[in-house]
Image (cartoon, rainbow, N blue to C red; front, side, top):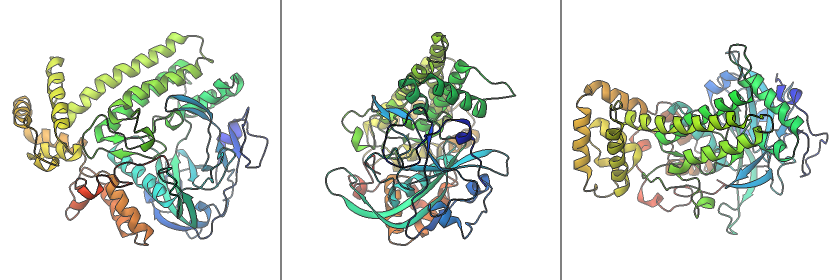
Length: 498
């Protein structure tokens, strides 16, 4: 059985058809998933199943329900209505164009979580699209969200990957080379998928009543602690704090979201909407995996904290309709700036196994020279930090190590000498992963899965459950990017269709 507090608490679209349209005065539209030809479970995540009170092994009816062929009892499926800024420009109404939420289920821990089908068919927000998803994008989302969870990064989760048995036409790079690909659905789970754009759209439409109802629902359900319900400025400050933590965590593991539009930022500070993401194969603050962002590199690795601030500013603008005290909202933005700055420095020192120096200039100099070192030669970020703990960074370089390596290592060892070695190594290995879902590995798994071989997918998921622990016999999952993947589609750059 499913609960439907979002639907019950907020006004809905009076129309029940899926014709594309502008929806006014509503937070959701009623939608039923479109049935597929031959749904089949390709992956099932036992821990996530327990979170929504489902068996650890997929039950026989799971494929039919999560493939969209059967609406489960108590479910009130809907697509959410929201707007957003895309690449810095207001895009107006966006909404769930290929996502249908079945409802909320309460797990054995007593917590309620939303269950969504991504790729379940058209909705009123699909515009000219088909509402479907292909296997490659669905698999990438399932693997990445589970990898991020085990890395310790706040994220939505994935319950299952479902093959639909239908073909889906996609033009991966929007260059006129469309082709038919196998379709799939990623079943997503989170406490809520409310995002910044959920507040932006009613504010932009001048609908203060709907904005207020959404804010009150969100605050009362997700931000009430100890029985006290915060006011709007306190709520915004909490969002700022959670977003700051998320940005620092992305930097820690070398993750680049690729499309940080305001409709892709979670109000809970979770990583949401995995599309053209990537993990740094080579440390480069200017790298973005998104072909759509290739020219401006707005969402590049090193700019993500600044974009987080920009997006929060847009959210503050929307909430200002409910909060006459604009200074209170501004203080939330200032808190974000301070926390990102301080936590980012602390995080990188922790990756080096160091504690903050009493003179902050010493830390700034060490970290500054480190970033110069990492960018002076093509350097695998993941392997460099793991190698630093193990005493050998040479496998991290794609070519010859940079000239300044020995000097930096000398300065680092002198600084680290005041920290006991075993404890320092343990601290480093606890925050520096060995295994991350590199794009070339995902590409290999996608090819195998499309060919009917599920073994690589299941092995990768198993490896990523213990990303900080060296696993004998699984070195291939920790290897740096091979030369053949340097410019290969799906390995180096991806599109928003990925």
